[in-house]
Length: 490
Image (cartoon, rainbow, N blue to C red; front, side):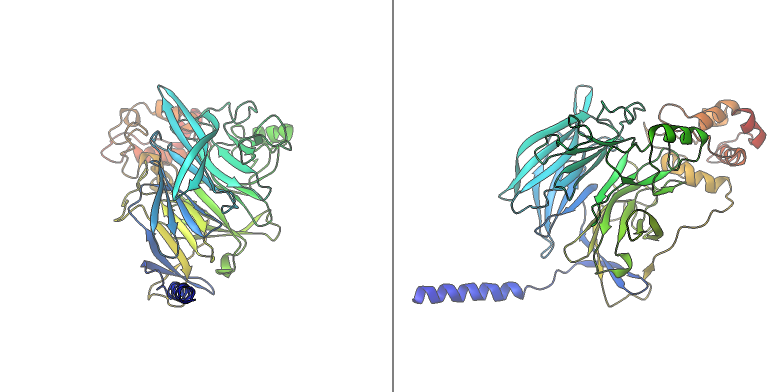
């Protein structure tokens, strides 16, 4: 009896101590004023290396996949971070590496984590989808479910479970323009599979993983509370997209970019029943990870898509219509404040987690900041700082000069100072091509070359302004280019 009493006392004492654990103390960076709510931004974790994917499991833990091959699990009550896995054969160059992650929605009964990463054997690059089992605070028993062609970029990456219990995988076209429309290829597609990696019998083609086709490089994949599937996708030089996905849908790439507003695009769309995006951006913003916010904690954002952006360096709040089939309003938060944002997830109490991407292959001027890369926590507060951040709306179209046009269309690759990215995007400062024959330069800009997209959509005046600007900047000393020269070379 005495032993039982001591045991009961110990259990009660442990329970009371557990209830009285102090709240997690985090470093606060900023506050945000919305129309009704106040928010605070805190640092949940720092000194990470490109936390590419964030997932909250059904037990309330936050999973983090870093591009170099590390998977960690964060206790959101205590802040404790435990490394679950270090993958030794991840191949990371540019936007390859450990990319997509999904946690089984019924994690307590099915303790599986799905990971997508690239590997390289000799000259062959592939993208692999594995299923791991969570056991004793480790990911073990890796099982290869599917392997497809990979590349240094355009691997897509995202994984998501649907309300049907199936696993969806958004793949990129690996820079091959023939793949996205070819149903025999698994690149440039949304793939649908059973949790064990087999093909569902109710797929559009019961012998194929392909659920939808016609994609370039998807970076976000999420289901809403209505069961609707959305993607975010990088355009080429124009038309980043948000798409609402239908089974057997064709989303146009590479024949169509964004809205069907060219004669050739309309013709292709009519012949192939292509589906328009519900939102597109030109100039591009480089949309990245995306989640659906259906919580009541931040009422202004209920029934919205939350979208992180890389070039835009912001969080976009995309308010959805009641039926979820259109975007009714767009707001922008944190623009240029925390740098490139890679992914977003919603916590068990309606709080939001963001990951920065300032240590990736394409850092922007002024970044990385001290402590990057970080995971930021956004939650409700009653106390605002003296200078809170606020949301803004996209600016209306303005008449832009050469410098502004360059920053909109060119600087994300060639950089604001014309320095480019070594072995990827050539420097424009001191470039013989830039300072040389105007016609050769005009042809490349209008028609593209290799992986550089064509900018033929620019008006004659816009193209002339950009080219004249780069021929006079960063020590370059070449003649101005006129609009009629652009017209002559179309």
